[in-house]
Amino acid sequence: MQVAEDDSQPSELTQAEAAIEKKDYAAAEGLLRKFLAREAANYEGWFDLGFVENALGNVPESIAAYRKSVAAKPEVFESNLNLGLQLAKSNQPDAEEFLRAATKLKPTSNEAEGKYRAWLSLAQVVAKSRPEEAITDYQLAASIQPNEIEPHLAAGLLFEQANKFIDAEIEYKKALAIDAHSSDAVVGLANIYMRGDRFSEAEEYLRKLVEEHPQSAPERIQLGRVLAAEGKTEAGIAELQAGMKLAPGDETVQREVAELCATSGRNDLAEAGYRELVAAHPNDAELHDGLGKALLFQKKSAEAQKELTISVKLKPDYGDAYYDLAFAANDTKDYPTVIGALDARAKLLGETPMTYFLRASAYDHLRDYKRAAVNFHLFLKVANGKYPDQEWQATHRLITIEKKK
Image (tube, rainbow, N blue to C red; front, top):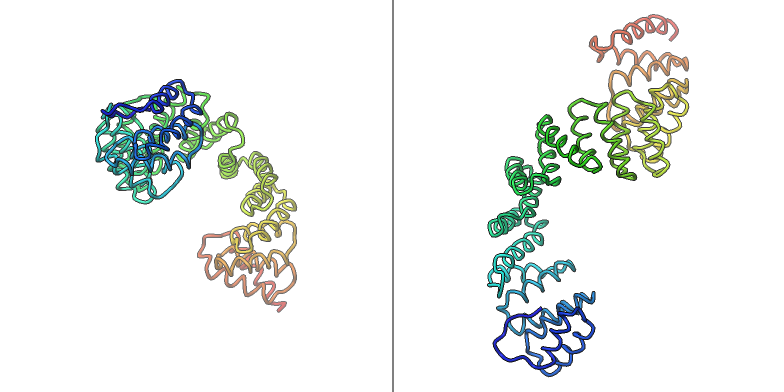
């Protein structure tokens, strides 16, 4: 890894660089250290040692050598770039300083490639803390190497994360113009189209990608999500399941499939999916709630009550799970649990017409007619004709139970 220098080189440095060419890094290290013991201010020797130590996997030693190379001759592009890259790899905060310095210096050879790497690397370092600045840096990198796809993909993602979908779309389409088969660009476009409710466009791009890469899980999974968002639930489930087979173990997708199956009435499939997830994560309250609801819709009320009870024990502030528990307990005629679950839910989420009705019905079954009447009246006060069957029941039960109070 030679940096041009006019002065004639001492023999150890010449031998070390010959060893580097042969990838004999251990020999090169010994020669360079011997040389630098005498020539401690030689920037080229420290540069070569930085390269060798990196090749040997000694990152701290590589950084130390590059630092000495920069200190010996600060205006060398390659020394600043390599030091910045090593510091970035080690997540050290001064990586930006040396990468930024590199963007202002001239490479000794292949200027366009060197400058491109400097701007790209600088953008990657500042992307989390200063995304707008990173976008500018990515765009500068792209202007230097117009046929490189990476800066467009990276800038597109940052625009997407900032909810600047038009700008993101421009960058992703520039990436596709460079590589029409870029799955990253297509997935990026699909993401922003989904978030902008442009589902048909997202589906169009993803179907082409799936046709090109039928054995690629990410594309099938993304297509499944788009189809589900379009309301094409069965087709969405099929694509997600195909994606799961190609990439087993993706629990995020497993959850999505289970939820889709539940919302589409495929509760037997939802139950199977949730059981597998619960077995892997027994302390996840939401998974127990999902399984409980899938069981409840299949009229497996006792099993549902068990799962939902676990859910609220794991997460006592889980209001929705208390509601599901109340329905399950109502089916099993466990009326004290119905009342307890509804009261707990009310503290978290307030009352609804159906919570009043369920509580009234539970008190009625327990022959606590006074409390039953109070809740039936509260139900009728807020029902407003939206629950005709229950309103008829409440009205007629009140006629009967108010005689018994």
